Image (tube, rainbow, N blue to C red; front, side, top):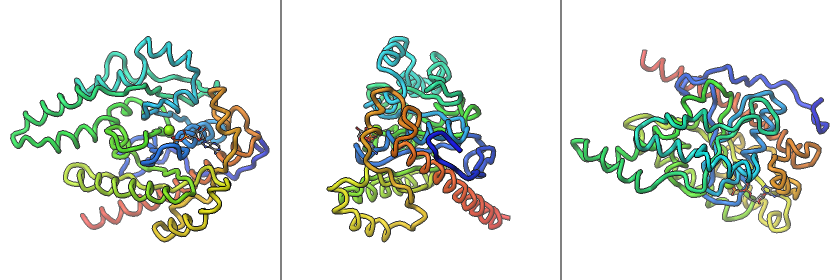
Length: 337
Ligand SMILES: Nc1ncnc2c1ncn2[C@@H]1O[C@H](COP(=O)(O)OP(=O)(O)O)[C@@H](O)[C@H]1O
Ligand SMILES: [Mg+2]
């Protein structure tokens, strides 16, 4: 029996399984993304991560890729964050070094990781920043790289940066974690694209309202475009793990609920939609006041129990998808032999 009165079956999805296609790394990289803001991405990210660490004994790193720094401030106090910024120990200083010279030596990515969130061993954060990269520096670097290329192929230089940026940031950390969860910004910035390209799976949180369907379709279209852009160099293998409906149960939401569900179910198979939905629960949003996700600060609240249940479903979905991915790779190999 776990804290908060929630009981779970044993989950056999252990991170010791290295699945083909994740380039032999230990940690699974999961991105939380939606073109829309305010749909519960960050809340889902921090609670899924906290729940994996606390209830499923996983080693988890949250990476804050949004300049609104909501994930950072959900996991550490503004005072601690201000101190780190002064010490230049935020993601921004890693990103700029990688853009400039291809690796990060001062600070290194390990220098920037904040450990023991909520006093939990193995629950860490790579804190974000209110600006994450210098756009001028990015343009200059890409321009230089493209001019060295005999074909002056700017698009290829761009794709290469997209491909390596997060991979290089995360590479030194893979061995320390079972899961690395990337909290993406809304929209389609360089870091969101890099996160999608580097991830094994992505989760798509959405509110049950008409415009959500548009947000879902836009992201799917963008990912298809990413696959095409990269297909000649290095395949994009990320897969949708599932759509999670968030902030359900409100008056406005219920009016459109059936309509939205119907639409989503015509576009996606049932396996791509999480059965567990996150209801509107004011204690979920209030947890931000204590810089601790609700699954840690108030585990008996309805919202907290739902996040733990969602985490159980997440692990189950992961296990099923890994099996399918492995099967696909075997089939591809058989075709080569
Ligand atoms: N299940 C929930 N119940 C109540 N409020 C929520 C819930 N999930 C998120 N919120 C609140 O909604 C707002 C947007 O959520 P957030 O996770 O920051 O979205 P996003 O990352 O997509 O912009 C925040 O104020 C958050 O506290
Ligand atoms: Mg957010």
